Length: 190
Image (cartoon, rainbow, N blue to C red; front, side, top):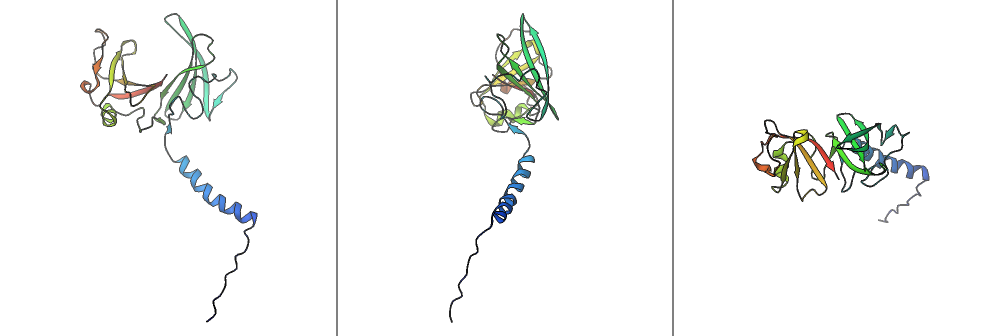
């Protein structure tokens, strides 16, 4: 019995476009459902430490409404651009000198997470599962605990520790000695 040969027809540009679209749409959908954005080593996907601060006439950044203010503390002033997220905010803080560069990024929303999954709203027990090597020190002025680890360089986790006495000497504390239900209220990149 003779074998039937198959003849392949050329694919038209329209068919290529439809094929590409059939792959792109599910990927876009998955990306939109992916949950929190990821912090990068030195910032966020749309702004990094050292970048220029948003201009005075900018009212939105990466789809988030932006407001600007000036902070003053201990004789220093700096610009702060606050980006509104659905469940919190991200603050871009300038340097003190010219107030033109992003010097610090403070995340106060669970919509942005650290590589490894930690985010605002997590508890100290979640942090201790990632690594046991945490350094903690009271941030007396704001009655928070600053918690850092070499596993998460350039990141300072701000924890609200209920019942902690901030009136004493400022000294390092064992993170594992703090209550496990202490919550992350902010993550600062410097």
